[in-house]
Image (spheres, helix red, strand yellow):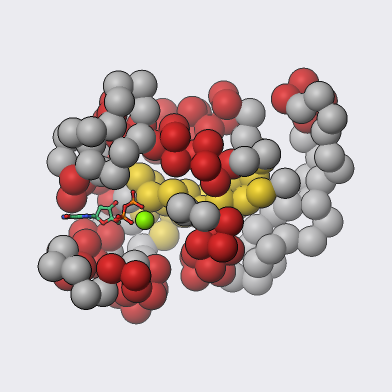
Length: 161
Ligand code: IDP
Ligand code: MG
């Protein structure tokens, strides 16, 4: 069972879309394993977006992501990393299909409202930036599990962070 890191960026929080976006992941059948409203430090923002540090938009991206509260989340499920990326849509909202989160809620590349890990390895790395040891909640039994999965797995006893 995979986990992914999802962040609702400051524009999503400011525009009042926290509930609507979380609802999409709940409705899909993914299971919540961590959730917090936080103000990201510059240091963590630079670490999180380290792969982009030489890009011309890096400074603006760090400014933006630290400009107001974000919602950091861990979601769990089969293929959740790739599925969440599909739900989010293309990075640039002008290319995101209607029906995707960016396609429905965003217009501009620099205000694309949501982050999602692009691989299982990135998810692990990012979850450990945003969550402290013991903060994730992996070991809860969800009563609907057998209605989401034909062959449900027992809840994890140990969290990845
Ligand atoms: P992703 O968020 O879909 O994984 P990345 O290429 O990893 O996309 O870029 C990280 C974030 O950096 C994007 O979500 C977007 O907010 C911002 N970004 C990417 N490319 C540009 C750009 O050319 N101009 C401004 N911001 C950009
Ligand atoms: Mg990325």
